[in-house]
Length: 55
Length: 136
Image 1: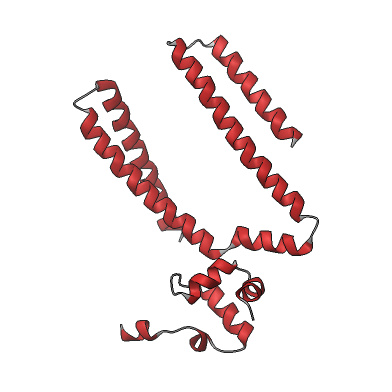
Image 2: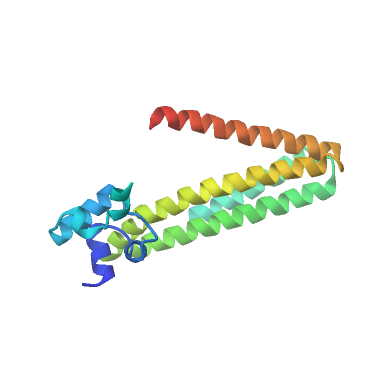
């Protein structure tokens, strides 16, 4: 699957997906939900929350 | 497209009439004003024309409409706009304050103008802060 396809499926630009992959941008809750739903997994399985859990 | 050109033409005619009806103190300022007005109008007109061209092009293709909609509503772009506005206003305000300090030694009129502008910008920011504090 390409970034472009994922971007189109979740309603953002390809640049947003690139920024998410590079950890330059933090997704909103809605976007995180859409991505997780698209892959059929939970949000925790897509995103790394180890930094938040350390707090 | 024709509406934009007609609108700009009307705006320019209004400016010329206003210039004749209410003469400026300085003829040089009047010319600069008309130049500024023309430049601003052409820039806005060009931006609008490009926008219309993009939308008209997208209207022919369902896929392009979706892409255009996504581009307009992309959350990262909104975040960039938000951060740009916050950083921009901060820099503008700091620059204004620095300019107030400098112009106090140079020119009274410019100094008072900059103080008034700084005050207005600060008040606008305060009003928006109160508004969004209550809204969100």
